[in-house]
Length: 330
Image 1: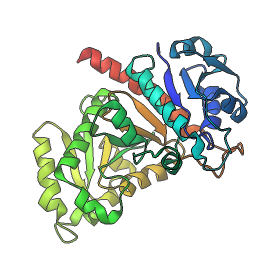
Image 2: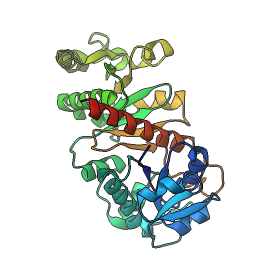
Image 3: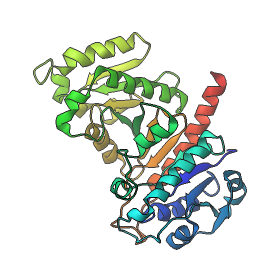
């Protein structure tokens, strides 16, 4: 790698700074990254060697010996394990700076530590539902897609953080088609899969069972998938969600597109809870994140598991390399 990965602070009252130190210890010989955070907060949260840098380029020479910190002053010393809106503006600034570094080519990819949406709303009137929507805004795109990955499975939910009672109305043909199309392109560009196969889950039990358990598959999903097949996208489904995640079924596809949040996240987290990575597709830059929250309840207790962050940083590196190779050829 010739450019480091930009890692945001996340909420300093959670586990983000602590697991960042663990990630540096694990990746110091392999995957250069720098952390955008208040230097004093980092020193108090982790026992790894640290060094302040002035710009991302300096991280490459520092990384093997110390965790590079691009210092961003925060207002208040973290009250570990609590919601602390005083630092909301700085948490947001860490994300904005990281995106600027990636868009300007000073960093190869973005990895984000967990945030707490309530803290950002209370402290800075944050108008976005979460990271994904804010990053889409910063990247200048209208539509982005969440992909969850682990060594065993990739899943993409079409609808995300909405009530189950609202899913049926939210599942428009345009939304399903955009989600599948963005996932298909990302598998080729960012994961190096030349001709990806996408499995699509049905909405209803047993994918409607011929209309006996709902007609959305017959009325809408099947015709839409047939249309997309004519565009050259290899699609399986709609498949019954209860039979598409066992090992033999998973071997037949590269990603599972699911109709709602839990349909996508339950199988992935059941198969590998610790190593899950949250990836945002459709952005003009690579973004990954650990697939967990701020974990206020265990912050500062020395028990936080950094596996998901480590996997997220490694995946950011791999995706950046694949995208560079793809763009060079195409």
